[in-house]
Amino acid sequence: MDGITQLDDSWRVAGRSFGSRLIVGTGKYRDLPTTAAAIEASGAEMVTVAVRRVNLSDPKAPMLQDFVSPSRYTYLPNTAGCFTADEAVRTLRLAREAGGWNLVKLEVLGPAPTLYPDMPATFDAAAALIKDGFEVMVYCSDDPIAAKRLEQMGCVAIMPLGAPIGSGLGVQNPLMIRMIIENAQVPVLVDAGVGTAYDATFAMELGCDAVLVNSAIALADNPVLMARAMKAGVEAGRLAFRAGRIPRRGEASPSSPVSGLIR
Amino acid sequence: MDVLTKTLTLTLNGEARTFAGALSVAGLVDALGLDMRKVAVELNREIVPRSTYAAVALRDGDVLEIVHFIGGG
Image (tube, rainbow over all chains, first blue to last red; front, side, top):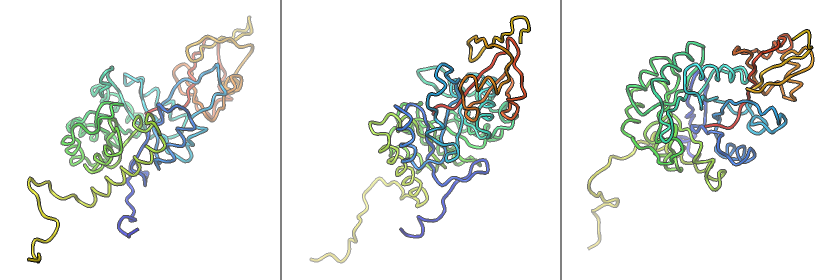
């Protein structure tokens, strides 16, 4: 390897430094061993998790923590299933007690079939969580005004959707994602919508700090292979962003010199 | 604890459960067969810090939520 690609290219959020720019979800896997193997292959250092009631009728059932160690991975507890600020705060207070950290993923969703971020409820919940001492990475619409407001409120990372959760459609509105990135002073992550490796590459080429992927890995025919593909895709996109792509042109430009031809 | 019947009825994760005798949060977590390090407990909508489990006595009618981390996106 050359020296340039080896240079430290870590990113920071809430005072923590991460080498990997891929964050992975831990939901939807067929079983916990597959979850563990795919996360290992992804190279991720941060994983999202949900908070739910313990099944009291089966207290010895294997737990996520037995397979995905919180001492190795930074757990990012989410508020999935919460529809109000009160529910989100209550859930993440429990997460904080279970895990002992403040870094959380806020997501307040509207109903199916869009599961689109409910932004008024997201603003309310973000304010309540920040007041309660949480460091909030916030899932949001691809709206530059909303994103800026969340940043000004004190959210530590802005995470607009690329496409609806689980849709696998890739970044549908690159213009707005780019505007959010260009206006942000905090990390911007594309969260939701990635379907395959080139979607992650594309998001990173837009200049995102990181990408969050769950369904595309967990529901792939071979989650471990897809996790490895996402790792490569994120790295490729980041390197291409740093390299600076050529302008798009409406005409051809020869790759070989046009002079010195034999006659 | 109800001193007359000497039983303790709690609502655990939405279900009524009856226990014999006095119980602390630590005692409850143990009686349920759970690993204290992997769960968090809310008692009547207030977080119970793990360091206080042994000191917090449960009372008849208490409502508890006991949660852990599971897979999520």
